[in-house]
Image (tube, rainbow, N blue to C red; front, side, top):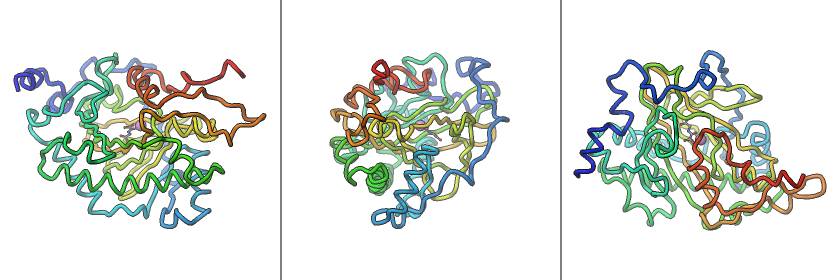
Length: 351
Ligand code: OGA
Ligand code: NI
């Protein structure tokens, strides 16, 4: 309690700072060479593939569509995913309620230690980064649910139920996508499922407050996700941008669809056939934004390496094997300053 009050007086969370300022504090300002250049961003509403998951289990066609999207964009959107609209609404609603609670209530979950399995924090990694990001986030481990549910915030009162009800069907979608991706790579349908050990699932509630000078800072700067796949729900406020052919493109929200991107682990398993693409979140001056990514992960002990089926004379093995725990720790410690961690595990000196 004493600790929470001390932290409260320092305003560790951005949303408590952002509510009454009309300039971005200096620690959020990016150098001129590293700013969003918002007027140079295009829109790819029409061209990020939208995949209908209705028939994903049986259909070759869906896995081919997914494979093509992974090759061409590293990103796609999904509809008819089977996650009920009420479940999506409740998840969004309870996230909004969480961030509207008084500071003292929110701070009960605060931690700046990335190894904690349930924590509220701000920016990306406040311990290692030089420039802060315009974001607060609550990050929860959510698989196996029974291992973590008791750690989650108990207010708002429906929080645990609403978030658990969301995480379960999102996991089902993740498993179906992993099968489709395995198949699209010409691997056994359960290849990725088996390659990632006992599986892990994290969900983040990202809260991007309104920003008085959005051209000076990022919600999240360009980064690749370190996990296997990410399944993102966003509210109706734009902010996500994807790097495509060297240009940042906005991915504007379509109600009830999820945005899927492949993460670094699929890039490794596929021996670079599928790329884990850089993306970022920008902020704006008129509206706060909430996004809810689910990060589907290997378990920390899982040993990750390119699939031997994808290696031959023309396609030499591009990565040394590593445990996901090792990779994940590097990701957090390195920060988002350097864009991808994959290079740390490349065997490029053999080529
Ligand atoms: C992330 C991420 C994008 C967004 O949390 O890794 O890329 O739109 N978020 O919030
Ligand atoms: Ni991301």
